[in-house]
Image (cartoon, rainbow, N blue to C red; front, side):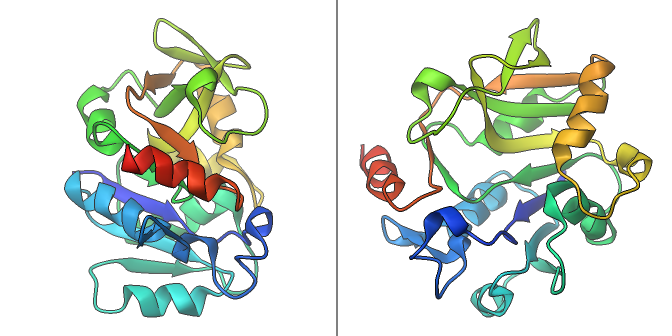
Length: 221
């Protein structure tokens, strides 16, 4: 089974004032924290090992996870962004393609990580979960990608939904310590090896306080 990286190191600035005293992944939605919802997806999909990175109020996340089979990749001094954070966590994640998950979204429908694993094959360097922009609850801004025969290109009416499987060997090609996985995606798009999978269920971006009731309405059906 692929390993799983959950990105939990961000400052949560869009979620203020709720993040003044807690990290965004520990905000509850319908009675369960965003981080626990992400862990539920990973465990249900059989992901192992599971790694969570931390920075802002990271001690709270570490206490929350105490006693659970989850490894911590701490970034105490500098947030490394998604690319740098993933590269730092590789010794904990192990070799081979890994799954990554953003905890600040909620999902309905089939387990997105299980769906990504079922669709993955060796033609791919990355397989990103997507939702149509028109169905992306609480999304602010334009879409991210277009799809052509399953392959990704930049700009279009699909939103990156915050879950993927990605090969990590090309991380060594990027010299910066702090960088986004967008840098890696661009390399893979140029080679025609970045693919997308449309999530058929509901999805909500829980990035700011007004999105919480929208997410709860989606979950409560």
